Picture 1 (cartoon, rainbow, N blue to C red):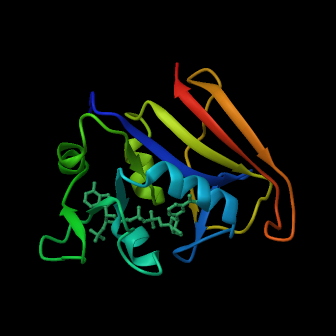
Picture 2 (cartoon, rainbow, N blue to C red):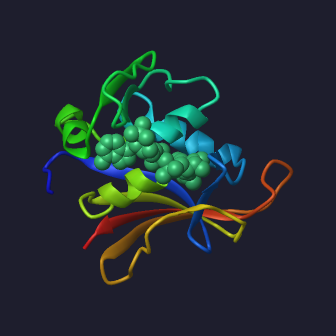
Length: 166
Ligand SMILES: NC(=O)c1ccc[n+]([C@@H]2O[C@H](COP(=O)([O-])OP(=O)(O)OC[C@H]3O[C@@H](n4cnc5c(N)ncnc54)[C@H](OP(=O)(O)O)[C@@H]3O)[C@@H](O)[C@H]2O)c1
């Protein structure tokens, strides 16, 4: 599968490549959430059914929400429902960045075709049941890295990294 559409992945990943546990996120990182919101607002976000169900208030406001499921009947409020990765790509914008926002199964399927990663590298290795693929140095160029330390609102340190495919 290939696409010329601008589709990126946005994710927060532990040192052990952990991304989730029991259909929840592993960390509460307000400044990373702020980065997520600033980047994705006004754009299309693409997610799997489980990730949609993990959202506290359903569809993300001020964004086109595409939800991928095999279920042909399911309708989530405010979402464009699709039944395959190909259909998600067909629904994605051609002239504005689209953000794949999880979860594990959706990241895995999009990972080979996206050109950009917004990868929050979290200094933690928690227990998890979902993981992100390995980002290999020979395949991805680090173009930006913004470190963030521990403070009263962030119990772990992290670095927001941006990679482009080599
Ligand atoms: N750290 C992060 O940045 C981050 C971000 C997002 C999510 N997460 C975490 O990731 C975990 C969820 O990941 P997950 O892998 O369980 O769920 P997911 O990828 O969100 O959703 C999986 C579901 O998507 C649908 N799906 C996947 N591939 C499909 C395809 N090719 N065609 C049609 N439907 C398809 C299926 O839905 P149906 O079963 O309905 O067919 C499948 O059960 C949670 O713990 C969440 O908190 C972490």
